[in-house]
Amino acid sequence: MRGLLVTLFVVLTTLQLSSALHPDCELGMDEGQGEGRGFRLFYNKTMDQCQPFSYKGSGGNGNRFFTDRMCMSNCSARAAELYPQGDAACALTKDFGLCQNHFLMYYYHQQKKKCKSFFYSGCGGNGNRFVDIQSCNSTCASYIDDTLVDEDDDEDINGTDAGLVAGIVFGCLGFVILIAVIVVAVQSNKTDKQLQATTETERPLQETIEME
Image (cartoon, rainbow, N blue to C red; front, side, top):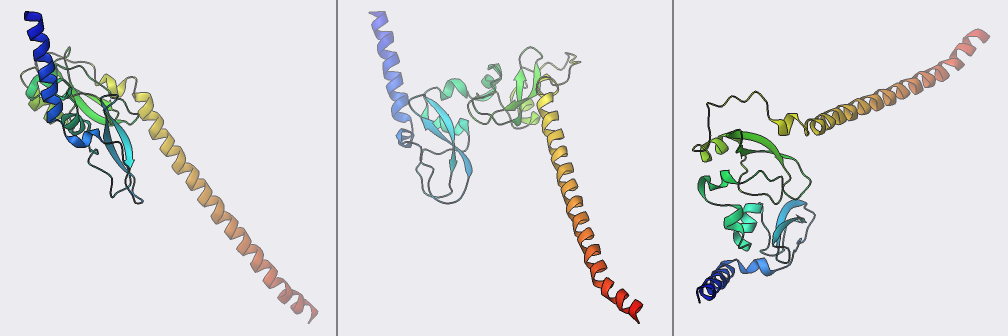
């Protein structure tokens, strides 16, 4: 009997949460009309997750959100688990997310008991993610232990992902150098053509002077 009551309670709770979710979450992804290319998220009810799409700027429907937190809070019963209120988010593990972007964010590191930086992919993830270290320190203040000495810098930035950052920097530098070389080559080519044109223009004058 007790097991039946527990099952009934779970079913009723699930139905209550489902009825409280935004009805637009049932709609499919609609990129709208126009020439814009804005990053947005839509709720995929089949996979129960928010996925990215390119919004064209106008039209579309209500199944369109700026952040994963906003999307999941409106559409998924898992929102309370992924994005709990207050400092409960600090107890969650770091989650890079599901996309392929790299946005510098901060999270609370349970072992080091302080806020550290990491790269967020742009979608998915959980509430242990903050836009700046001040927000992380403020939210997770009760978890932070300033007495611990952390000799290592942010391993997520200076470790595995350091190669990625260096690659981007040197790639941009190489691109700038390539553009500079092309510009110099074009200017040099123009100068050569101008000198050649000047020489050809002056040659008949010289021949006339010699004939006189």
